[in-house]
Amino acid sequence: MTLKSTADKGSQTLSIHAGEKIDSASGASTPSLVMSSTFVVDEEISFSANNLTSETPFVYTRWDNPTTQQLEHKLAVLEQAEACIAFASGMAASASVMLAQLSQGDHLIISNTNYPGTAEFARDTLTRLGVEVSPVDTTDLEAIGNAMRDNTRMLWLETPSNPLLRIADIAGAAKIARAHKALLVVDSTFASPMATRPLSLGADLVIHSLTKYIGGHGDAMGGSVCGSQALVGPLRGEALVHYGGVISPFNAWLIMRGMATLPLRMRCHQENALALAAFLQAHDKVETVIYPGLESHPQHDLARSQMDNFSGMIAFRTASPRALAKRMMRELEVIHYAVSLGHHRSLVYLMQTADLIGSSYRLEGDELDKYQSVAGDGIFRLSVGLEDSQDLIRDLDKVLQ
Ligand SMILES: *Cc1c(COP(=O)(O)O)cnc(C)c1O
Image (spheres, rainbow, N blue to C red):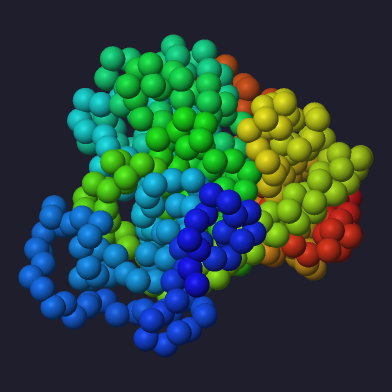
């Protein structure tokens, strides 16, 4: 009773069953949690990660683990990928891909606003190692084309992006990357595989922070990289076994359990987010609302064509954001004032412009003006959860005064 084919199954069936194996020893219907770090073998196996193949049996959990492997297979099916590796966190996945694929003298083009950890890793760590890094507005295909150099090895998109929910045209960017023989990597954390399958649009690798929508419950950190066997296979040896950012099998098990309801949760995240976006848009204390599902989003048409689900992330701007943030910390009853996103619980956080620009994005000139014209001194990032939308609206209405 494991799926014989996945091509003819719907996403609800796949989220529940894909990748899972019945434990032959116990017959357990639920995937077994195997916490063992090492495995008893009955044949000689090379101790070098360089000799690792997809046929190698389980040796040591830093190579692979029976519970983690089921998560990896489930993720590969949902992303329509040949192969997947799970990591300890989204940052472990992102940093591992960049380190394994980029060498001194290579050039990286990256969204000029995105997840702050990724932004700082590219600007500080990679440049220290001799990689050239060009942050560009990746919503602009012409800007991407103009930034391409002979040594451009990787184009890194995040879509929708943190915190302004800018949408990058994956298929358009893939054409440019291919023409320059550069790898296209897409951090699809905000979209989830229910909204967008970047590989089918021409991306080479897809990154997820499993900590967010895929795990979905705010209780386990993880990350993943999906793509072709030719690209992902070698990453297991170098990036997982040698850099060592391996996920705990317990976290893999929790994330796999969360994934079973991903399609149902994403539908509810979108429904609640549409209700909250409409409420915020109509509220006289709210100056700007950004949600890909609103017609007022500057790239709503691209979002419609590239996303099957607009996800649950909203950005909104008000006057005196710091005073409002203080009221939120004291007075919100349901929504948690906390970072992170994609959980069943709603979360809100003020992303202060001076903080982000100074520490992470370092924007100047037109790009700084463009950011500030949308975000002002700061913009609230609201991760709409699965509570009753009326309760969320009442909670926000109470603090918006
Ligand atoms: C959270 C996040 C990350 C980092 O993931 P962790 O699991 O927190 O390490 C990377 N990219 C995006 C878009 C994120 O939201």
